[in-house]
Length: 441
Image (tube, rainbow, N blue to C red; front, top):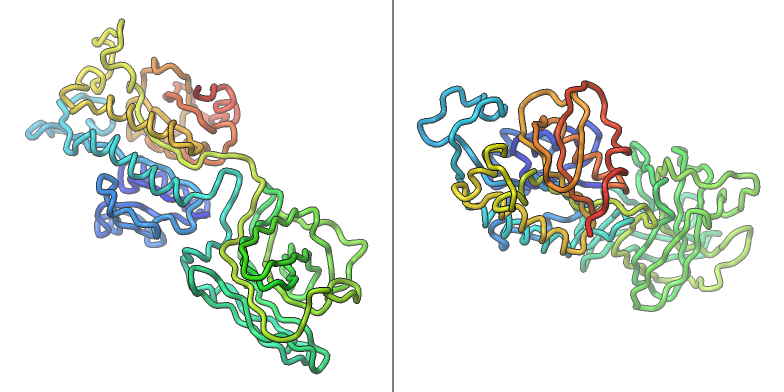
């Protein structure tokens, strides 16, 4: 479940990366300068060098294995040249210095967001799914995870392999019934830690088969030869097939014999996955489509399906985006970004245009509009509302945590809101915060 963080070296972005790593997410950081990114981010972060304002730098490899995106990009704003005394106070939000933009807001806040939307729309899995193995864009050598387990372990002579070719994993070989054999399979190493797929209904395979009947097998215990949970599926010769395997339809077996008193699969701890071609079905019954000889099953992907719809994109925008030129606004009461929107290249106007592009994209999203960002500890409860009238301050640490909470909340889907910190120290009730917000029209 790799999370792509765009703007990963910025004030909020680097905190998002840190918190994702602390929660054991694989993280891919989209950065303009890989050398600078490596100096700022931890070694385990995978870097992808690209510039959102240059669409040609955004390659499909950037999205391989990515399940969601957190976008923290923004126009760089700094004190004007010569007005840098006590610069730290500027970034803490406790003292105002005349600002200037370094980038072009239209390119960063609008064109860049459109470029990002274009590529992630093509490659993010649909809402409610989680990619487990994407063999069309593998991010690691498949042989490091998958290996053959054939009937030679019981004296047979069948042989199989799994290899990458033509953007697929190809499970193939020769299956033989000689010497009481009759099965060939490939299996993953045990996952450590095991996968928690309890939020999903089952497993989806996208395959191109050879007309034979295969088995999908998974296990919810770390033993190599314990109870396995199986599902048989038929293929059509040289024709793409999508196989959906509900967890509730998996049959508990031990060496092809059903275990009558076994519990259902515990999908909170999935330890391994396996694909098999076998002479036998279950309890001595024969596979009606089995024949010895060569076989080939091409696998494009393995996903978990049927999960709650959650945000595919979390965007950090800004409070105040609708206020420039809004009738009735008292500019004296507004933060500098609103008062100086025109002098700053229309930064808030272009942020709003970027938001509109997200809402029109068809992706599930959460758009967070923080009030003035500070370097203070994120130890105060947060308050959120809608309508773009909120003023105040909020810690970058708190916004980073809010991004990750939104990513994991079905109640945050398709909602845009402003947020500030209260005067009260303590934890935020995330479920209540998201639940009380209205979906965008």
